[in-house]
Amino acid sequence: MKQFLRRYLPDSHRLRTHKHLQFLGACLHDPQLWHFNRRSTVKGLAVGAFYAFVPVPWQSLLAAITAAWLRFNLPVAVAMVWISNPLTIPPIMVINYRFGAWLLGKPPRDWTFEPSLDWLLSQAGDLGLPLLAGSMAVAVLAGIGTFAVAHLIWRWRIVRRFRRRRRNAVAPS
Image 1 (cartoon, one colour):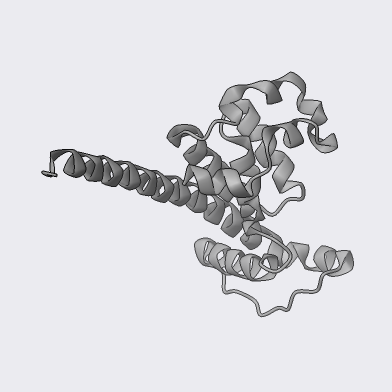
Image 2 (cartoon, helix red, strand yellow):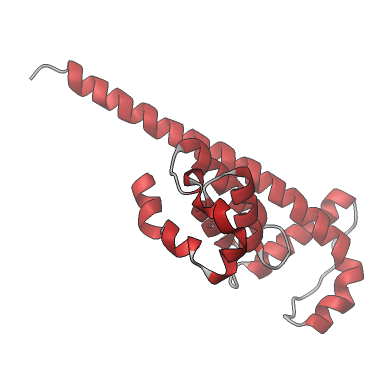
């Protein structure tokens, strides 16, 4: 898993020198932010999954700030945010809205998404609270679920590797 993550995530030097992350300054030099151990990486995945479902701009920046502040794996947190991307945002918002309406006990309205500020402002009153409630609930569930699944997968791989090593050491040649 470490090799997969290292292959596809940007290196620490590129992120440290990125113009939008310069305001974080010296805290980007903390080695814990760049280390791919189980605790740091799994927590970074959870932070990224959380922010992927929060309906705010600059999700990557928020994930980077949170990861730096809490000393989680920064590149993993930023990469996980891209679960929500231009292709997945409309279905995510619809699901979050419907889930929020269900949580609030309101019947969901039928609506079609239009990517414009005028549409967003005109619909904010009717869609805002269910969308916010659903998004926050899904974000918390995604963060907790990602943490649990990633932790279990990481642990399972360690146990499997240990058992294989022990089996190979005991097996007669």
